[in-house]
Structures are given as structure tokens and as C-alpha cells.
Length: 266
Image (cartoon, rainbow, N blue to C red):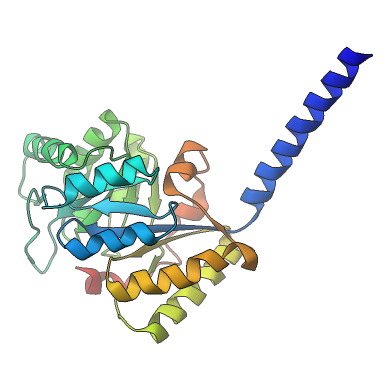
């Protein structure tokens, strides 16, 4: 009888755990990435945000290693914010990928970049409106990303991007940015983008949002993110998303991106 009761208790505990997990993922999921980290001492203010917010760090910058190491110690997801050539030829900063590079040079540069951001589990593009539109260049990059066991998030700085198409073909886990939060740095604009974010999440189940470590952005997110749960949303870490194998067409879709904002984020 005792053995039977123990078995029933274990089964009920497992069922409750399963239901809890299902209830979390039944909520619309909001995935937030903060990128452009690494240059400014004020970037450390991002550590005041919830741990689910991913930190995407520029390579070989003054704070790249210290921010990455602290984020890892605090259980925050770390990503490499990989510089790529833009159509406007804006300076990429250290270790940028250009469209005239041979595959070997792309691989070599990427390896140097990833070493400068310890504990990175994924990659998204910094600028890249020219580079992400070049299929051969993206193939060389994605093959190295796959070798290193990383995922890729397309920042979608151009509607002509080939990033996800190539990632799918090569077999790299991937997602796509749908909202840029702060290409205008004022509260009214943040609120409009936040509403769009929630509308997309409700309609599709997921939304990927990219912001930057501006003081105004961090202050807004500190105020708004804690209330998401009470509003029926789940703030989901990009690491948890990929770890659970939850990739779906909802994050691969391009219908809901801020296409008009793309060039403003380069």
C-alpha cells in the first residue's frame, strides 16, 4: 500500500510539473535581446534588467570580456553581436565581416570575434545590410556557426537578408527580430513599440525584440518588463527558447518585422 501511495505521489508531482511547464509556454512569449554592448561604462546598467534579457556584445571592445563573464556568472544569456558590412559603408568596428572576404577570412575573423566574447551561445548581426544579403558570404559564416554549436538571430537590417534562408539550409538553429524597440529614443515611441510587441506575441505566440543599452531604454524596460507576467505574457530567455527546441515558423516569419526601421539601426 505504501509503495502504491509513493507511486501515486510521484505521478501527481510529475503531472503538476508538466502542467506548470505547459502553462508557461501557453502564454505568449516575449524574447528580448539588448545589443551593442561593450564600449560604454554605462552599459553595465543593463545588469539591472531581468536575467531573461540576452546581452549581445560587440567583439574586441573594452568591456566585452568583463560584461560577458559577469553575465555568465549571473545566469544571463550571452551572444556575440557580430559586425557586418552595411550598404552605407558605415564603420563596422573591430573584426567586421565584409562582402569581399573569402570564406577562409570569414571563418578566421569570426573565430577571433567569438573568443573575445566568452560564453557566447549565439550570434546576431550588427549592421549587415550588405553582408546578410550575400548568400555565399552568409553560407561561410553559417557553416562556422554550426561547427561551433551556436544559434543565429537575424537582426533584419534589410528586407533583402538571406540569413535565415541560409541558416535553414545549413542547419543552424535560428530566429528573426520582429521589433526594434528604440530607434527613436522617447517614451511615446517606446510605448507604441511595446504595444506592437504585445499584439504580435498575442497573435503569433512569440515575438523577438531588440533594444540597445541607452539609459532611456534601460529605464523603460526596468519599469515595463516586471508587469508582463501579470498581463499574461512570459518573458522567455533566448537560451531557454533554443534549449527547449521550441523553434517554429512563428519566429521564422518575416511579416511582422519593422522593415522601415532596418536602415535606422545601422
